[in-house]
Image (tube, rainbow, N blue to C red):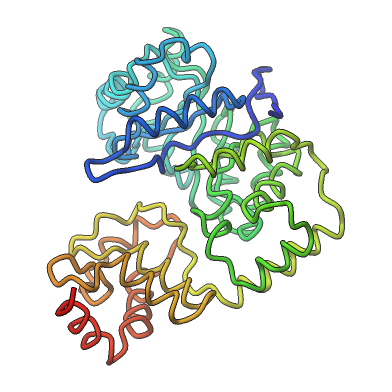
Length: 393
């Protein structure tokens, strides 16, 4: 495992474990499989684990894993996030943070983030509630280590936020397809100039840059190096950059973990050749010609009041564009339960209420995009076909 330093000299594994996409079963997160993944990750050298108050069940499950394996606490760094939109008073900081400590079954967290802080105005609102005084008190009591923020807004908002406080670290969405999106490379380099460690989330765009790439893009990667997985190409692009400190991966199965550990075992900066950089440029061009909706599957838009599986609809739509009508239609049927009257979660349910739109960190016009999904994924023959399928299944 490669390690890079935060601004205080702590060695952080270049591969971090993002706990938003732990393996699930019908009753929720699968504790046993999640525990196996966490233990295997620690054995592989991973020491940075990222969760959040808003990741349903994540803090609780991670807390149970820590309680069952008390020796882990000294081996890893815990990062979690404050849901600042739920803070209306000074007392809310204590209420929410104490609940997080209870869920995690720990006395302190090492890295604490303001979750999805979009601009300086959002920070100023918290300042007026007294967050700076509160953070200082928590740090003096040893309950919070370093303070940062995660970001999904516009680039200027990120640059403005760098000015309002001497942060300890930042977390941004960044990958080879999003080099100039949100904070982007400009934000990454601005943070690095200030000496701030940068934690990267969505390195594979919610898995879209690992599975579901256009076939031509996969073939380009394979031709360049058949021994390297498509996911590994995504991580290598990030590990190559000295401004990147930790890359979070939402690993949900053992194969993903094994592949990521292998990639992170040799991840020096400057590892890419000019020929490999050209491969990325060609792949990006192919992807942009095919993808229809820039959804990462973060689920911030969910739950939909009408029951639409919004990320599932968009994933199937993109798959249709990238891999063909048959593959996309099959994915749409399975992700929206279109073959079941009682469980249908497809685009047809959208009533354009707009509840989802302000929640989307990618700024997607979800209502309009769902109209496009319905037009493409549910043509005139789709309903009768599903009626026949339901009759015989």
